[in-house]
Length: 165
Image (cartoon, rainbow, N blue to C red; front, side, top):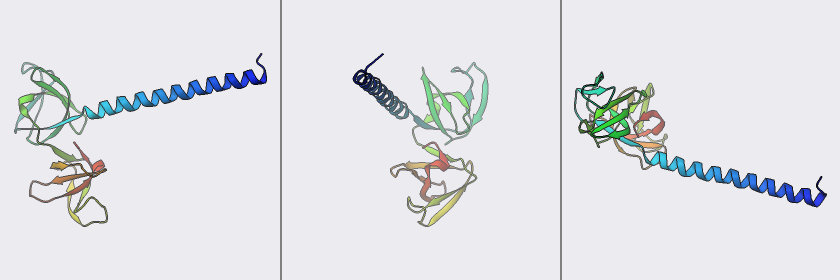
């Protein structure tokens, strides 16, 4: 049994170690999450009629054929092949030569408003329907992505309305 003073010392030691442990976990989580988010590589499909495979080989099963400018996220790179994810979450292997560094985004909501500036009170330049692909220009404003439609119109869309940013 601990005396009053002994209980206080024990309480401080336990609480401080728990706080230190919690702080350590938070720091590790932040470091790991920064590392993971920094590793996301977005590409687009470079050409029309690119075959997506179920393994990194042209002899493997063909999953589907995709068209140019489809945004994809590279998950794994292996000897000339990349395992990629699209906006629906589908995974497939594609030859790295079929990927382009030019970035595109795809609308993932039924109708996205594209504004003149990164502010919802600014003028709406145009609207884009779900699955419309637009060129990614930059993401310099938090929560916003600057995009350009293939017809030349450009503006800002909320980042939670597109995939590939």
